[in-house]
Amino acid sequence: MSSKKALIIGITGQDGSYLADYLLKKDYQVFGTSRDLSNHSLINHQRLGIKGKTEITSLSLDDPKGITGLIEKTGPDEIYNLAGQSSVSLSFQKPLQTFRSIANTTLNILETIKTLQAPVRYYNASSSECFGNTNGIRADEETPFKPCSPYATAKSAAHWLTDNYRKAYNIYACSGILFNHESPLRPKNFVTRKIINSVCRIADGSKEKLVLGNINIQRDWGWAPEYVEAMWKMLQQEYPEDYVIATGQTFSLEDFLSRAFAHFDMDWKAHVEFDQGLYRPADIEVSSANPAKANDELAWKARYAMPDVVTKLIESELNSVAV
Ligand code: NAP
Image (cartoon, rainbow, N blue to C red):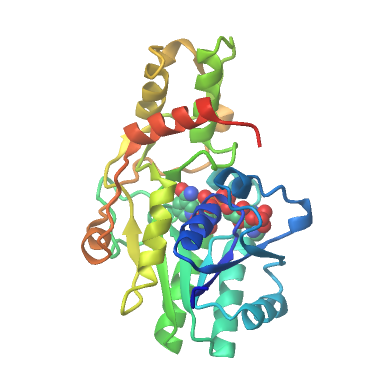
């Protein structure tokens, strides 16, 4: 049995599931939380073949006593906080729930680590959304935050709380500022998943129209299984620091769309309609990254950028077995 234990807050989501898989392969004992396991299908764990290999506790994240009890019971060496409402679009409809699930949860965990004086290393899931519009500049760890959604504002609060507790209480706490990363485990309400699912159905003969909002936005899309390795690497450094994690390549959503239809020799223009209602009240036009620090200090570099990501998502969708 490994001497290392990890606690993943939000273990059922995309990143939580890939990280659990990654750590199990490293022989960690993996614990995790979900808000209500009894109502949860654990479909992601089933897809990765890790269902039953982790010990999951139902936990309300606004309950400091629950978090304290869990940390005392499991005694983790590393805590990864990956929980929270993760959709930027939904955050405009549910700002309070989004803010609480991200900022309050982070504060509860950091306060618990401080109070228990637990010798634990803490990872905070920060986001490229914190940068807002950088006007073409490739964002790095020194780029100021200009959040432009309730989600990004909450992530910024969580980011600076993590920084504050690291400096004030000497806690090994760091933030991974991750740019978009995709996988077949992405929830279906995310635009990338929506595009891939629809393109595959249309290629199979469906006459449906794919209805989208703003396709001019530009993002840096990577492959999620690679990104959880960067999270782990951050917690293995001598000193805790923050890192931008991205491919370093930016593409428009139109590029993504075009690539997905081109996989089946189709032209996206024949199958797509637009709905102004799908535009966000405020949005980042161009999101681009400079991941040089992670490349150099973590020896981490993304192998797959958007074109490969699209191909991998399509292949996975075509081969997917209902679970
Ligand atoms: P995800 O698939 O949505 O997983 C997040 C998990 O948090 C969910 O499985 C859910 O678990 C829990 N959750 C959802 N809504 C919640 C709420 N209102 N309150 C409390 N918990 C809630 O997200 P992910 O893609 O794995 O991302 C992991 C973390 O990285 C998130 O914090 C996300 O914001 C951040 N991030 C993601 C990306 C990306 O591109 N994927 C980029 C930058 C940052 P239960 O239902 O089991 O409780």
